[in-house]
Image 1 (cartoon, rainbow, N blue to C red):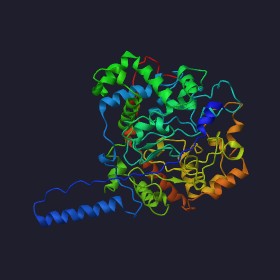
Image 2: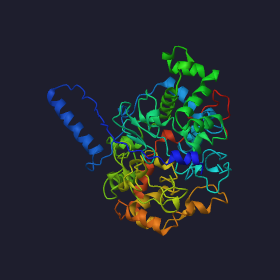
Image 3: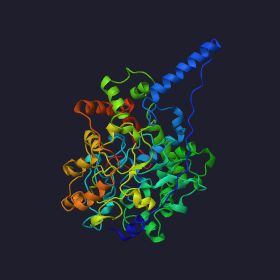
Image 4: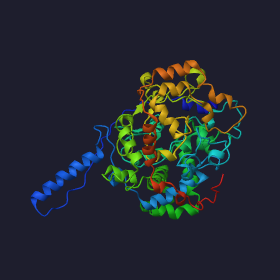
Length: 484
């Protein structure tokens, strides 16, 4: 593993949280008489309680427009170009869309992402070679590339599997691995996280001996400010970007020198929030608002199981079906791990790597479940390639952990790496440590109930997200190819 990379990656950060979510409800329409108005209001409140809180505290409700941050269409147009442009990678060979493709459910279809050094697209992407060709290159990726659906929602207080980018009470409102190097001017988490893949050696930056951006980072001893400055200069040097930039940011008054990495992050976030947000009238949202016929009878029964007997909504609740917290659910550890920790240096301690609290070991952020059927493989390391299997894991995590079949992993083969990917999952000591921290109960469902539960899981798919080809531009301002 590259020493420069290892030193920076091993840093841990402890972040407090401070966020309140304000919820507003539509006003009651004017009625003909006071009596009818009161009766209508009582019925409305009763219907909303039945539809949105049918099973108590951990209820699921329909999405509202106010759940999202507003989108600026001109910033989104600039952000689309930046999202698909390889100009923002050190070697000009990879873009944000490489690992978060609209054609693969805003992920890449792989268990563990393959960034720099790999070639190809999605599941056909191959590991390639990794200068200087170490035997076990951690730079190839360590976790599953999460989907981007609904990340422009206001309720997200943390992002990434371990939550290392999050809101806090500091003057700028964010705590990140960049620390004081994070420039001011960001409005939300999605804007902040949109500039961090550029700084990851194994994702988009590359090695110091490969390009001027990574070299500048090595010379200055930081993966952040020098990287951001170099990439911004690249964008500013592309005349085809100028009209998009000035349209998105009229306050620049035609002065390209004022363009910064903050403008980049805000633009990319506006694109993601616009392109990948769940629409407000999906079948399941109509169901949650009281239309019992909006989804199948099987899915409706599955909803009752989800919020009742199966106890799924104890963690997967709210409009996006996540409690925004961290839990240890016993997902088998495959791949190289994260941070060189644990047995054989191949474990992933999850949230503990951020908080330094051993009680957070193996805890990962509860993923939102909107469009979950489109976002496989599932788990922080993509250990499960079938949605059915990850759901069964939740019902009996200990049994699933011990009976795990590594062949379901979606990891492109490379002879010198294949056996290394399963060191952790084949280590009894690692299995024991993961098992003893499992915090979800065993749930017994018969097969009919399980089928109904799966019907509800699939009903969470927004029909408008089944085909996202329209979000892909035909070209980008730099002139670089979109193909891999």
